[in-house]
Amino acid sequence: MKFKIANILLGLSVAGIYCLHRTFISVSLLWMLPCFLLHGTVVILGCIKIGWSFFLPVVCSSNTSSRVVALTFDDGPNKDFTPFIIDTLSRNNIKATFFCIGKNIPGNEDILKRMELEGHTVGNHSNSHHFWFDLFSARKMLADMQEVDKKVYAITGRKLTMFRPPYGITNPNVAKAIKMGNYTPVGWNIRSLDTVAKDKKQLLARIESRLKPGAIILLHDSIKLTSEALPEAIAMIRKNGYDIVPLSELFD
Image (cartoon, rainbow, N blue to C red; front, side, top):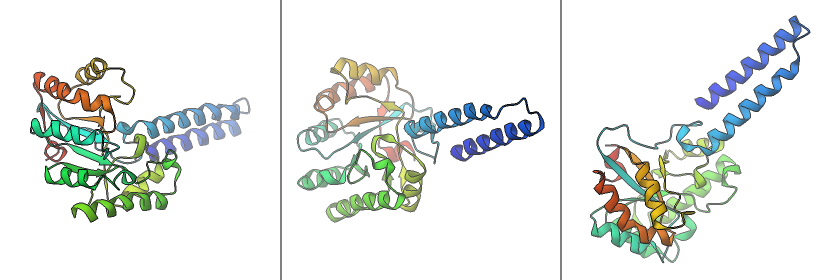
């Protein structure tokens, strides 16, 4: 809807300038250029800022006053770090959501089974996580996404319903593929930046400074630092008076 509104505003602006130009020759058509530049900037930001829900509604937080947050992990399963993360979650009686990449599942089926057995939720994070995924056609995207569904269903018997776009990028094709596949798109409103954090102190400080009721925290179970910092992150979140709940409970 926001994308449609942006297009309508662009059309009205261009039409208005054209009409003025036809009426008053002194009004230059070059005034259209800032309109196109502004529209392009807004659309690009809408693509990279998943929290804007620019092309379709995306679940990025819960509108609640309760001091609850949810943990989500992207890019696994990873044989080196995901088991340790699941161990930590188990010791703390926490259920999380793992947005898995399909190509990482072969050889790690036991990890996926453990997620299911221990009550965690598995989400779809594309099969290829291709760098140019957001430039695929909608049908190619959907085929990629459904490949993950097949792999997970063969192992757990579960049908995936949630999808997190690679790199958090959305655009009209991503929106179309999500709708065609009847997925619920899930983003975040706390990006831990654990993929670039220099140490645990930096990672924990970023999460703590952004804590708010109903937050969805983005982490990665493919990062050594994340697996090492998770016990302290959980303790810090609880020390701030927050409970860590499953995504399903956050939006119940």
